[in-house]
Amino acid sequence: MEQSKETDIEKELQQAIRDKESAEELNKQLIIIMKNRANAKRGIQPKKVLSGYIVTKSEQFDYIYHSTKYKRKVICLWRTTIQTPIDIGITFIHAKEMISEFLNDNLCNQLGLNIVSKQADGISDSVRMVTKNNWNDKSYILDIKYRQNTKLRLWEMLLIHNQAITIPEEMCMSRMV
Image 1 (tube, helix red, strand yellow):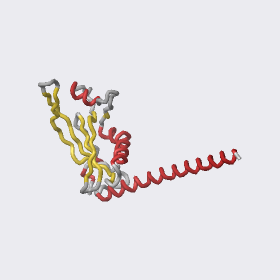
Image 2 (spheres, helix red, strand yellow):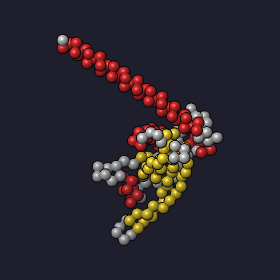
Image 3 (cartoon, rainbow, N blue to C red):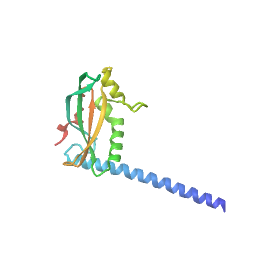
Image 4 (cartoon, one colour):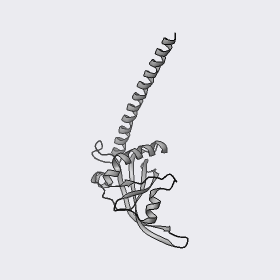
């Protein structure tokens, strides 16, 4: 009797594993379809080859912070807006997860950026880097913000970084036809 319960449980476990793998594969295919549709909607050619992440703007701005109670300092930072192929119909949590995965795997290498981590005290290294101007001649993402482009119905991310970036041709708006 106990052996039949064990085999039943093992069969259920195996079926659950197959269902999970099937759902993961389906999810991957849906993400590819979503990316291709977003690329087609924006006229990006060739739509199946490119990632669908497009730099729409990169500009320099002055960041003002208080170094002491009465003293302000100004440093020049950069703000870059990147349009993603992710539809705003996807929840923020899932969109952020997908964007973060792509950012870590591909985007940082393409743009020559490094991600700054948070310390145990909750203060990011970027705050320390800004106040000490400790760049070590590298480009760092100091902050990431997300927003919805309701006109195109796509998620965008806003990167704050310390140096100008070289934008690869496949990420330029000129790729759009």
